[in-house]
Structure formats: C-alpha cells, structure tokens
Length: 462
Image (cartoon, rainbow, N blue to C red; front, side, top):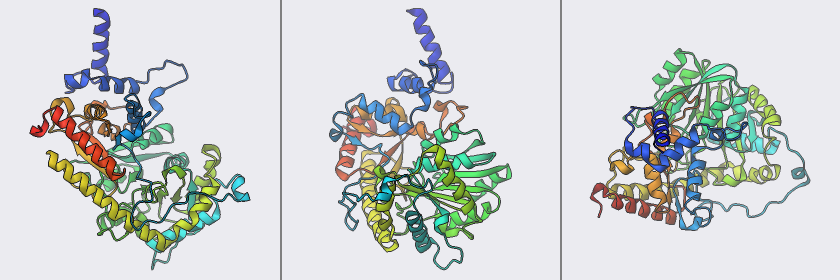
C-alpha cells in the first residue's frame, strides 16, 4: 500500500508540474484528479485517445450527470450551457417554426456548399446590414452553408496552407480540438491580459504578423470574456492585416451587443472590408446563437469566392453538408428588416439578464473585473474566495453539490500542442458563467452560488 501511494503521489506531482505553486487542495481534490485523468491520454484501448473525445463544456456536463443532472435536468441551474434560451417568450421576437414542410428537393442530397436560396439570403443580409453605400457587395458565391460552427471551423482549417496560426487566450474551448487535428499549420498562442480586460490591440496583431503569423483566429464578441472589439478597433486591425494575414472571425455572438443601446446593431468585420473577394477575411455565424436555434445546426461562412469554393468542396469528405429542409425553412428568417427587429429584442432581453447576474454577484461580495459588453457570458474571478473554492475546478465541484453548473476557466486556456501544464494557466482561478438560460434558472443558479459561499464562509456570508 505504501508503494502504491507513493506512485500516486509521484504521478500527481508530475501531472501538476511538481513545484509550480499548485496547492495541496488542488492536488488532492477529487475533481482535479478526474481532470488530470481525462487529460493524460491514458489508452485503455490501443486505438483510442479518450482525451480528444470532448470539449470543456461536454466534460462539465459529464461530471454533472454523475450527480443526477441527466435524470432530472429540470432541478438544475445549468449556467455552463453555451446556448441561449430557445422558447418563444422574448418580447418582440418572431415565433420559431414548430413544423417544417419537406419538399422533394429536401429529400435529396444537398450541395455541400449549401442550397443557392440560402446562400443568397445570407449574402443579402450582410449587404443590407454591413455593405450599404459600398461598391463591393457579397453574392451567393461568397457564402458557404455548413452544419454548425464547428463544421465551419474544421472546413476552414482543412483548406489552410502551411502557416503560423495565431489564436488568443482565453477563447472558445472547441478551438483547442480543431487546432490539434490538422498538421498543415502551427498554432501559436497569444495571451491577453486580465489587467487590460482581455482587449485585442492592433499593435499586438502587428507584432504577430511581423514574426510570421499569417492566419489569425478569434471570436468577436469574445467567448468566454464577454468583451468585444468595437467597430473602430476592428477596422484598425483589418487595415493592418490587409494583404498580410487571413483573419478568421467567429461572430456567433454578434447579435448580443450591448454597446449601442440595444438598437439592433451587429458589430461585424463585414463593415470594414474593402473588396469582398480580395480582403482575406472569413466570417463564421449562423442560426445557433443570435437566432436561438442551436438544434438546427445551420451556420455559414462568408468570405472571398476562392476561399468559399474550397470550403464548400471539402465538405464532401468532412461532413457531407447541411440539412436541406432546415436551410429551406431558414431562408425567410433572414429578411434584413426582420433580423434587425429580432436583434433589438434579443439585446434588450439579454442585457436585462446580464444586469441581474451582475447585481446578484456584486451583492454576494464578488468584485467584478468589468461588466460584459456582449455575449451572454460573465468571466468570474475567484481569486478572493477561500482556498478550497478559489480555483475553477473546485468551485465547479462545489456548485455541483448545489445543483448548479459552471465551466472551469481552465478549459478556455487553449493548449492544442499540450506543451504547457494547465495548472500554470492564467485561467485557472476563473469560471465562465452563462446567462443564456431563462431567468428562473439564473435565479436558481445564483441561489446555489450563495449557498456555496455560505458553506465556505466566503465574503462573511452567514
């Protein structure tokens, strides 16, 4: 038994980087042990690498299932979910279809780049909202319809040439798996500063370009920080990158913009493009977030025709293309005036939910680093909590006991080459809190947070 214990202690020390400042609480907690086991890549089956099987959000759901979430989800507050509420309860929002007519065309295989009416509808939407008064306009040939955002990212990655690809930390967890799948580019991390509120500066982009980075990938608005690069700063970045680097802009949260008084404005790189076929800017968006239809798996990539042709073609061996009946049903949703009204309703509703979460957290004693200006996420700093719950994994575990779910910040520290010990991560003492769910779930989640704080006597809770 002594020998076995020593081996476990040695393995734990090695997995956490030895004397890297990791606390005994972190080294010994069950949730940290499970995290290390999932990310060591142990192969119980010769052809299987289980560490590649899920993203952070899926991992947190799997741990919640162990506590009963799968059997009684209605009893839980899932503030870890990466999706907005889908019900038809938002004032001013249009009703989603409850049934879909399937045409004969819908029974057939569809084009891997999407059906032409849907591609044209996306082009018309971008021209109306982002290309007014500009000579260069998008056509249907500038749009590829894909079965979800991840599929779009994977298709883009598949057609990239040999390049250094820069990505920011923290950012969307699924980038980690996508960046590790392909060997046609080298992924280069670009850390952002908490003290600077995780802002992406143009001079940082310039530094990356000067050292040979020719592809930049980022979400904007940003997941998980809830911060956005505004129009002026985005234009500066695009001007600096023009003819020097390809920008891949994940704009799934573009509708969740609270910086323009909830007037329905969507901030997009499409506003700053000079020539839609010469500017190397690829924009990814879809029905998932801002149209609140994550189950439809309908998304798009907008960009230069040469890129779009390649991205459309590679769908034949990657994913087979997007569901045709849902594409047909989506066309009428994209009428520009209809979308503007929808975005206005969306922004008012989710800003109110953001304000509720911010007030509850500050009333508990949390000192927020900033108030999110976009998305439906809050990047919560735990450093001032008692040691037992001041890191993302242990706070997550404590929340599970109160039937609440968050996502530990460590999952947003993208590490595709696995060169760094994740316990040295600048994201280790954070969690992502989602205010995507309905208000009653937010209230239940905040009540769960309060019970966790009281249990650990944090902020003098009684």
